[in-house]
Amino acid sequence: MSKDGVLVGRPVYPIQVAYRAGTSTGTAVIQVVHKREKSLNPKEIVLGVFLDIEGSFDSTSFDAIYTPATQRGRE
Image (cartoon, rainbow, N blue to C red; front, side, top):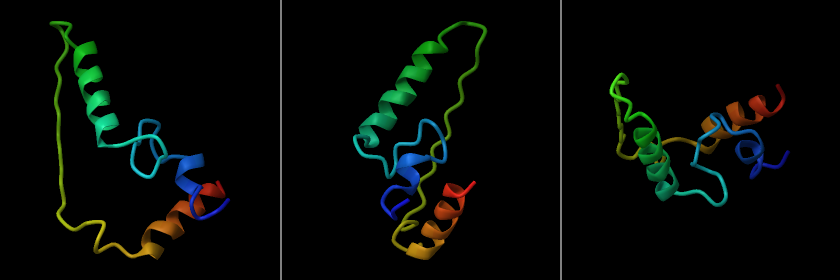
């Protein structure tokens, strides 16, 4: 599998939007809103946790991302 296709062909999580063609932060927001709307049942609890680590992608080396991704592609 090419370097560009590891996570596209086999995403880490089914609803992952990062590194996938045709998805964006807007896609992620829509997914969160949809999940919230589905859980409006009075017996359900909804918890949202959002984490933004400043500079996380800027300080992560290509190899630190690529190596585990290609290993996942071989599973």
